[in-house]
Structures are given as structure tokens and as C-alpha cells.
Image (cartoon, helix red, strand yellow):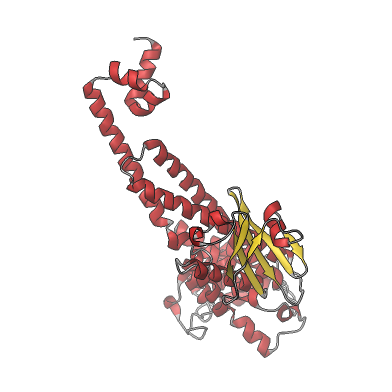
Length: 425
């Protein structure tokens, strides 16, 4: 047998049907070179591969189904007007603006067949003011920041409106616009948060469309291997994009909170220290990642507070202090609207509890406090004391460790304190 013949034989053995089509000899090979016995084996092999591929696709879409993708920013219904209104409200709370609106092109609206609009229009699909009348914008309009943002794929600002395109590598599907009626400018950090939110939104929409296509392919008895493999590749890539966007979203959200609090890098430092404690305690990777995210977001509730609360150089008054101490409750409400972060909620919610049961919000004590919350509490206390604040100077490391050690078994879990001491001493 020649080398080429031997190579072809190996290819047929490994993946017969793909080798046949790769050689572009379909009917000839079938009629002249393949026995009936081999044809039967090929047919069985193909059916097995299709079955295996469909099984893999089912696993992927069971993890990233509608409630895991289109609920990323607060979706809790398949009715589009409710979905987009919920997203707009979540964004307006995160960025602290008066109004947020979401505009989409017809091809990216799931119910667009029932909507009377031109193919060159942008339709307002959601608003943080749900009773507001929906309007459409023609992309031929001039001097309209929303239209310009869509056409150029760039952030546009005019008067009180800031428009952020819903765009990423996949394409441009619409615009998020926010409005401050007072004319107050939006900070650079919050604009960055809007950008990553827009990217996350587009990635979620793309993934949902892929899931719908995959569901149809799985039902199709005549689906071929190439189609299923292409869907698997696209789903895997889109899920990877989603993971990247989620991580960026969390990091940028945490940074925006720290900038408002005038405590740069505090959340990241807490998260990094919490991760080191997790590694010291030999916790598994998933738990460590969740606690790390909780560290980044433990002060998320403070993003909704006014900058005035953090600008005073004196010790906070009782009213201000109460607002600051209530931030876990506000943070939980926000996290509940950002569904992919739901698993970190207990760690954020209970990180103000005390080992002796005298903390807030529920007075949990000892081991009844979630482990992640106990770790965040110690990491947060250390980073708060080691850092300078407008109303006090930072403490030296030895003093911080000594103070925390003295409160072990009172405020904090002694085992976590011991871990901190071993890491930092």
C-alpha cells in the first residue's frame, strides 16, 4: 500500500465521513472503495458522534439557559418589556442617574415580528421609568447623541444625555442612554461601568441566540456533525466571553465603589487578602473564587450613597454612620438584581456579623455565620485599619494584628484570625 493510500486509510478509520468529504470524492468513494460492512460501521460511528455532540450541547445549554444569561442584569421574566425595564432600573441604580433607557435594532428584538417599525429604526425597549411611552428613533436623525452612538459605536454625550453603544466583537445591537436631569456629570469610573455593562448585555444576547439555535439543532433528527461542532465551538467561545465580561464587570463595579468612597483599591485589597486566607485554609477553587468576588463587592451598597457622605474629613455623624453601616442590606438588594452574582450574597450580607452574636443584620453567632462572611470580615477589618481615612491616620501592621488578635473570639472567628496572623506576621 502506498503512503498516500495508508494515510487515507488511517483517516477513514479515525473519522470516515469527514475524510470522505475532505477528499471531495463522496459518491465515488462510497460506490467503489467502501464495503457494505464498512458503510454500516461508518453509519453507526456517525450516529454515535451526533448523539455524543447533542449530549454535550445539552449540558452546555442547561448551565447557560435563559435564567442564567438573560437574567444577568435583573431579568426575571420572558416578557420583554418587563425584562428590559428591570435592566434599565438596575443600571440607573448602579450609575446613580435619573433615567436609563435601552434601545435595540429590530433584528435583536425577540418579538420584533410583532412590532411595527422600520428596519432602520432603534426602538426603546426598556426604561427605568416603566410607565414611560415607548418611542422609536430613525437612524437618519441628525444631531441625536443616541443615534450617533449607534452609528459610530462610540460613547456620545450631549446636554444631559450620555449614550453608550451596545457593542462588542459580535456586533452593534443598540444603545444604552442615561440622563441626569440636574446636569451632573457622570464620573469616568461610572462610564467604564456602563461600557462593561453594555458589553455584558450584548454577550448575553448573543449567547441566548446561540442557545435557541442549539435547541433547534438538538431537535433536528437530520442535524449533521459539522453543524453541531460549529455550534459547540461558538457556544464555548461565547461562554468564555461571558466569563471574561462577568469578571471585568465585578472588578469595575468594585473600583467605582472605592472611588466614590475615597478608598482606592480597598475592595481589591480585601479580596486579595481573603483569597490568601482561603488558600491558607486550603478551600476549594470555586469557594475561593466566590469569596474573592464577595471581597470585591462587600461594599457594593455604598455605590448608591451620595459623595457627600464620604467627603467629610471629620468622624462621621450618627446619621452618616448609620447609612454606612446599612450598606450590606442595600448591597444585597442590588446583587439580587444581578443574578450571576447571587452565590456571593450570603458572604456580603453577613460580613458585619460578630462571632459573639452581637453583629448585624441578624445577630448570627459563631459557626452559624457563613465561612465566606467570616473571612471577608477579618480581611475587611485588617485593610480598613492598615489604610488611611479622611478622619484618621493608618495604623502600623503590628498594631493592626494585635488589635484583631485581641478581638478573636469576640468579633472574629479565631481560626480566621490565626490564619491572618500567620500570613501577615
